[in-house]
Image (cartoon, rainbow, N blue to C red; front, side, top):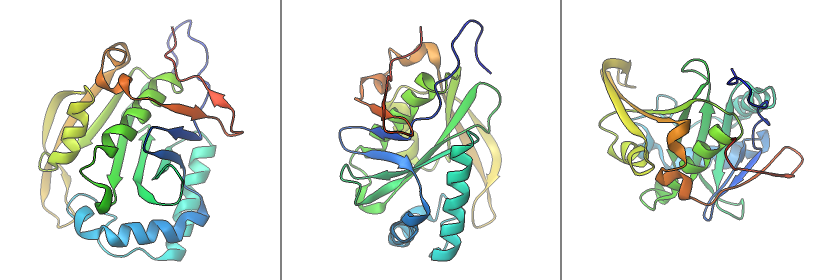
Length: 217
């Protein structure tokens, strides 16, 4: 839902670049690279992600990526692969997900184990935060994480998200036990003064044309 008197959102960015990362929608031809990245990072990802419990199947991954791209193109859900600037190496994955109510998006993200601990997640989550406010024109953005996932919580904290609540026994872990969920929130009016706004971001639309990442006035 757009706020009164605001222009319509320009639509999703099909390419977001920061000094050290490239974000673009997953495509079916990325299946082998994604399978390899997840397989190499299973021990790192398994405690936090239900889908990362065993090596994924290439054919099933192709089907999944076709679905994700269809959702992206239909403006329903926006999942990106995160690559090195050359576009040759998978760093991780992330997305803007409209599953937390009207005029809001939730950011989800994961990292390849070899690229964790270098501040890259902070960099590309900042890009997603800017995209949410500049291109989707939402009122708020949230990051949800397990309190035990200290690295994920630290990303939200460093970017200026506010820890609003920790919900008790809200989601199940892959082993069937229940876990709490931290809710980190940033509102549109707080973005410009946040550390997230300091990260350099460039954006392009589906035709490769530059998009203006400045905030609407």
